[in-house]
Amino acid sequence: GQLKALTSFSLSNNDLTGAVPIELGQLKALTSFSLSNNDLTGAVPSEVGQLEALTSLSLSGNQLTGAVPSELGQLESLTFLNLSNNDLT
Image 1 (cartoon, one colour):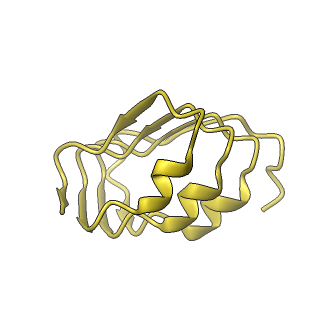
Image 2: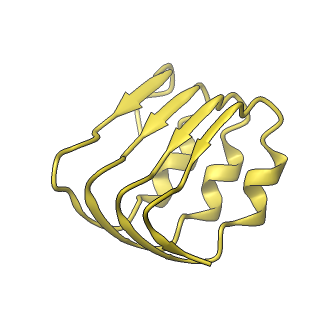
Image 3: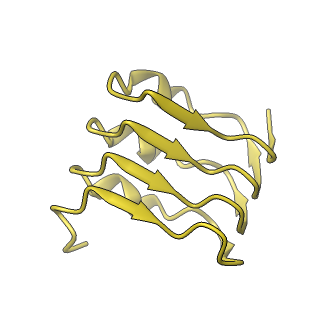
């Protein structure tokens, strides 16, 4: 990705399908990320744990499955996390 300086990304409420892209982990400057209320499937990628500047993450209202990646616990700047309304374990 060429979006190295991107700090905020939202594509909520767009009926997107497929998986959360693992390339997300390359957006190191990202502080806010939201893909809420789409039709995303699959797991939350562990690569999210590489986003050390992330303060807000919302993936609610999708069809995500599997375990919440332990890597999220390493995000010391994270102050808002919404994974509700999925099928996570």
